[in-house]
Image: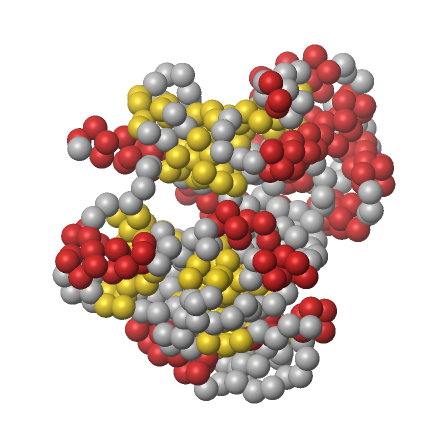
Amino acid sequence: MRKLAETCEAIASTTKKLQKTTIVADYLKSCSSDEAAVSVVFLSGRPFPAWEEATLQVGGALLWRVVEELSGKVAPALNTAYRKHGDLGSVAAEVLPGRTVKDLNVVEVSAGFRQIAKARGAAAKTILVREMLELATPLEAKYIVKIMTGDLRIGLKESLVEEAIAKAYGSTLAAVQRANMLLGDIGETLRLAVESRLAEAKMRMFHPLGFMLASPIESAEEGLSYFAEAAVEDKYDGIRAQAHVSGGEVKFFSRTRDEITESFPELPDALAGLARDAILDGEIVAWECPGRARPFSVLQQRLGRKKVSERMLREIPVAYLVFDVLYAGGELLIDRPLRERGRILDELLAKDRTHHGDTEARRKTGMQGKLAFGDEQGGSAGSVIRAPVFHANSPEQLEELFAAAQARGNEGLMIKGLASPYSPGKRGKSWLKMKRELATLDVVVTAVEYGHGKRVGVLSDYTFAVWDANKDKLVNIGKAYSGLTDVEIADMTKWFLDHTIEDQGFRRTVEPKIVLEVAFNNMMESDRHESGYALRFPRIVRLRPDKSADDADTIERAREIYEKQTNS
């Protein structure tokens, strides 16, 4: 672990991507394959491979208490260290005493993480975390804590780790990227690279792929300026979801790659009869008959629930509107053009249906899902519907489709190039989204404060940030305290208390993991925030539990909004 920690320090000391890649490659070549396989997972900023469901369930508050106890420092000293460094790992390196014990091995640390993940209850996890940090040197502890919080902050993304694997073992970057995408396990990808077997990587079902993302546009004219032929769909006010179907089993995953099947138990049965294994992309929406999506605020009541009551199933039915297929019948389809993927999806939903018997969801709920195809928009609760596709050849036609989509209660339009491949995790001009509303940003909460009046006992005032891509860090851009319900604020207060990094009394710095959609009237240049911008009259539109912190907007997006606003 010492060697990995020293490597991380070297990576953090340079801003040059090529140099970072070389440092990682040299480190990997110096390790055994077991050590290298664990290390690339850690260097990707996580304790476990992406496909695994294991989580540590260790919050910042627990880590703070352990560091405080082992250091023997009082809270003010820790607060000073945190203000100096800005992350708990660096605080641990400064305040923990030196150790004379033998170096920890990264394989041993990985085994320790698995013990922590299996432990039940904060007390049991605290003991295991303390035992691990007691054996660590301050530098080792720094990166153990950083890996546990998922916040390395050394300017290293998984894409650079992939480049390092290719460099270390003489593979092509494309082969490494494809194997890692299929497996969802960069450690296993490394093992294949060591043995020159990357081409043998197979799709691991029930491991979500990255979602292709869309870029916003301002006008119908812009919407038709990037490609000659476009497919046009409604932009639904729901949550993106990837459906994995194999052997009668169905699981749904959100954009954060978390499984959300339990929140929508009426949906799996409608897809369980597909004759071929498949991975579908679509949107889960709150649904009302005949064929109309309800607002996101209604759907939000279903999110994050491990058990959905019969009453909620009746009052907030949902449908899954499918618009793409990424994998079918043993073949990855993402390199095929959208036009071809659309035909495969039509055939898959219309014809390839067999009976696999009762699914677990059906047994639990007594409900059966319904597969609706084509323009059948009157589907009942639990419907899986092929999202209708339109075509537009002029801005006037696009405006007509936009007005019709909003009349149906949807947000606007998605405009997609028919020749475009599916690019997991990437945002470009192949997919566009057209909405007309007040400007909004997806932001990450970095600090919270107690409110006033009736909210004096809850954390209701949120400071939030966007990404500075050049520096690979979050920079604050505003603060808001209105928009959430009392129930949401109460739930978030509990989360923030459990994930506090620094308790400043009235104010708390928290783990940057909660994403909000924030609306505002306009944007100003300002030195009040590190981003260089401030929002006028910001208010919270909604929580975005379907998005991870990595999905938040950037300073570049804020700058685009500012420039369009000042030039209009």
